[in-house]
Image 1: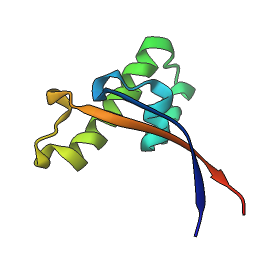
Image 2 (image 1 turned 180 degrees about the vertical axis):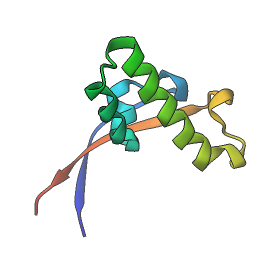
Image 3 (image 1 turned 90 degrees about the vertical axis):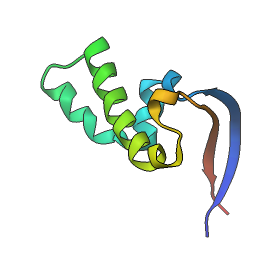
Image 4 (image 1 turned 120 degrees about the vertical axis):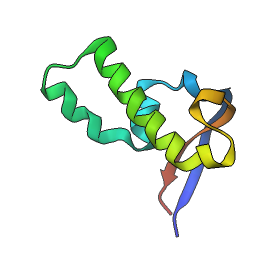
Length: 82
């Protein structure tokens, strides 16, 4: 069992997700692209593209595709040691 402390809550459109949040949501492997020279806007585009694929693989069948740009809850948390 793990304990989590909620450190922040906000609402935003899914397409407003930041590069850091994309990585936190499971697109970490795109950091590899940075090693091959991708930087700035190019890297941001690659990260968001990968997250869009992940989002659609989970949510598109339920009618919440990336293109529909739904409102989402963003919940930040940290692990609390007992």
